[in-house]
Length: 125
Image (tube, rainbow, N blue to C red):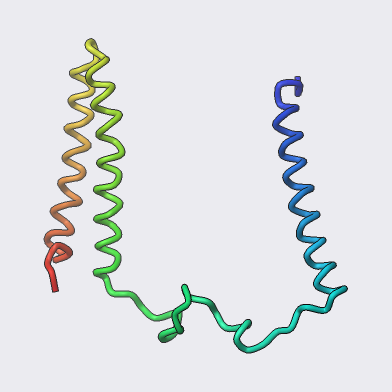
């Protein structure tokens, strides 16, 4: 019963054992060689090489979330349209169903587009 899963389980076990071994080896070597010297620079948060500007718990503008929503909406649209077009071209008997499915999807996208348009996310400031 487990025979088909045996190669996968072996690779998974090897990955887990390797991860535990590497972490243990790193911890042991740092303790033996006493190379762990904590300085204020090492304890400071690292932000892509830039100095930290302000508190990490500051509130973001709503514009930030609207831009993120725009990206997600139009990214999902492009990811969905290409396979849909390929399926539409190949599936002759199901073209009506596929066309209705795409129309519903486009209407949902249009509602999201109108929402962000009304909220002012498309205006340059």
